[in-house]
Length: 402
Image 1 (tube, one colour):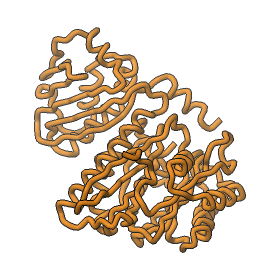
Image 2 (cartoon, helix red, strand yellow):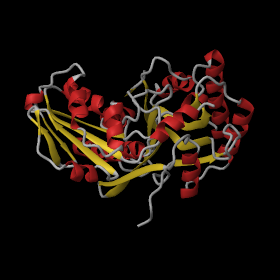
Image 3 (cartoon, helix red, strand yellow):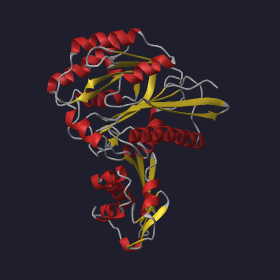
Image 4 (cartoon, rainbow, N blue to C red):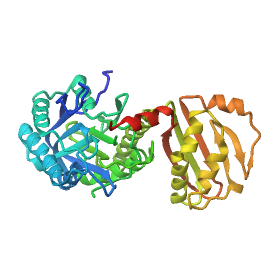
């Protein structure tokens, strides 16, 4: 079976180049073209301080169809006033002219340092060059993928295939994100960017119905430092080039499950590539009083610097975890709760459980750690992915701008 890559779904071409925005000679401009106007859906940051491409993107996605994407890294084009808006619109005009489509059918994206205007001469040359070198190969996929990276140490890719009506539908996704990660994405209205493609034939209305549930179970369930970016964006485009129509409720459900699988894989990869991370940590909160309580507790644990440092040190310090659950302002009764680390019960009904600290510490040294808190008070559950906090995280973020 041929290995899948980002451009495996038919109906898309992409490319990426180095334009000089970044000081390092790595790709910093990417362009993706749809073979025809394509149903699309996007979700953006809910931060009230949002970047110029977010403002432009919200307008351009409103029609439910796109002809392409244009992205730069190394500069977020955030907090740049009217000039920033003009530049984001200019990105779309340049890409639109190169792709022979209306600028309003192009979705812009930027990621990088906040507060600097875009070097438009470099960007113009980069967009034109990228658009002249579009293709459908794995090399083109890699070139586009590299153009969205900033402090990432690796590329992030996921894919799924399913059979509908005897034919194969493909869903692929790439993303970037290593720090400044605490997305709260919503339909219109160091950054998380996610781009998803499928060759299924599915309407914009159906895309909207399946997209946000997938986003909520994945990108909105990953946190590195709970710092919501000015530029967070997730986009899904459906070319229909497979000729397979997603029609019945069972087909929509199967497509939704496959999309969620791809998004969750990407979210876990973001957690694994957290700045300075040495391990991923999955927080499972079960039997919470309400959905809000379960999510709030999971987020409080995942974002606690004390918990994250304990995870880095392989310290089975259960007190930090249960106290994080108890301080976040939602129903939680420690006398009903049970906590396990890597499957070993360490706390039960208000008291420490009998366990061997050295054994649990050794288990916490794994690349993937599972923290499971059973609240014992309801039927709601929530899962979040995060990572440990190391000295390198401080170093990366202390030196990021300078």
